[in-house]
Image (cartoon, rainbow, N blue to C red; front, side):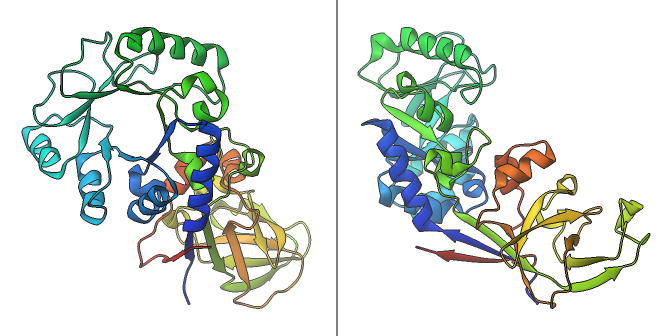
Length: 340
């Protein structure tokens, strides 16, 4: 039997892009599709985002950008991570990529965006030099737009002051959280990642902000067993039945991206919420049932009301990490692309 299935809905991607464009009120949307489109597929997501009105695709590395360029010949592609080797710069020049410069010299023959550090404390120039003719954009990155209003406003003010003399260049600062909560952070463009996938940058229900999750992850019960009182399931006997208890064993584990620290989270079986119990192993997890169900009964791990934000809360992490960690290797999971 197929262990699991990942369904990517490009219609949801388009609707999320349109939602963000509405929020941005005239600023451009630059879609962040690094890390294989947060596990959703960078080429598929990039094409859908552009079709819906995104202006630029943003990635972390030159290699990621070259993969996109092979499929999307006319797209503007911005490499946000460091690209300093002669080989990378030559590849970027040949492929018509745009590069971010956060330190060092500005390469020749490449469109460049200067990155100013306004408070993230990672990549970024401490002071903004006078832009040369190769510079087409000025940027920075918000550190805590999802939770710290005061510091975000401080970053916006720093960026505005530093870039005001160069307003003829494209200025971009906001991420998903900044775009949705801080109108003064939108400038000319916003680089939105997590929100285009229908994931909340605030760890809340995406529907609260009009977003629609684009990823559905499903499996099926591979075995059903009845534990007697006092019997257990899984490594370390972390779940011991207090009464006769039906369990559904699902052939998904942490090797597939269903993390070991997600014990206690909820999934859906026959449209009913059910709890994951016991230790999640490499290739299997157990779900507590209220009755015997047939082998093959569908299990929804993500989608249809099961949201990554709830799983992340149980695991003590963020939705970004969960979706990026899903193993889409065909040997582990079947990937399906739909367009609703």
